[in-house]
Length: 340
Image (cartoon, rainbow, N blue to C red; front, top):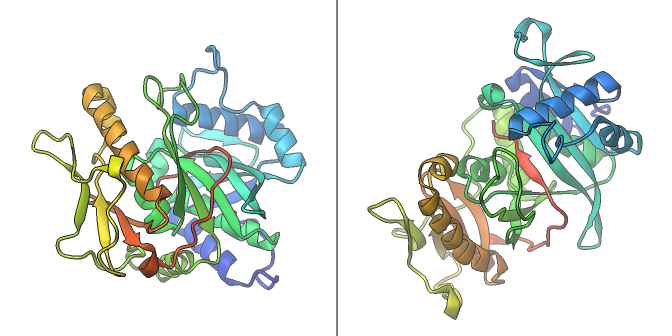
């Protein structure tokens, strides 16, 4: 793995965590600096998003743009398998087959320098190996070596596996709900649907981040950084008998006030939103509007903070007095698909 000496001012922990994540995934995270690497990264991202580079929208990221970003000191990194693990279907760069890539650039968040992670993608057959986690933990260590304490990005709030990855496995937190943020898009993942996104802020020193890092290094199970749910929790959005969304709270009148400092509520999402878009786009559209209304209100309400995601349960919303979360505002745009 590339990176600074663990003895730098950022301390040993970030690079130890990044090294552990890369080891679990069986990859080496390295900078992409030559044309072969940059072409390979562009090809990989096109494959992840189902983009036809000869279509009207062109490639996700052209090699000349990646060159400019890399040369000016931004984050342009790839995850490469060892040669022994390569197959004929892998995308080969200069020093081995790439299975993931991450592109990010400097930004400002609440008056602080931050890194905005514009796009992170992992080839589908490698997603379960933890390649996305290796890229994100490397991104954290890279930032801390440069005195950057925040990383921002966006993701589709309907995709449960990415919600769990971002909130549970990384400890990042939503700061804003962005309605149809990109407008119409023509790639295979977004075509024909509104591009709602959650704007995420990853505080690289936050207790939730440190807990997630410690869990990864320990090799034990990763758990959501949130207290136990009340029994039963407030269910602001659930799933009905037909699998469609059922609102249990009227957001037009504002969300209910917390009943206590330990209050929690749950906002459900479909188990597999991507399959729902293919099989029942009308139902998927109803889920989109329902999540937009309830989750959007929760992220904007200063009395509540979205603190966790539980698989097959949904987003956990906690009274701010109990969460201790800083409600930083995310900035910029991103497309993340770092599952794993």
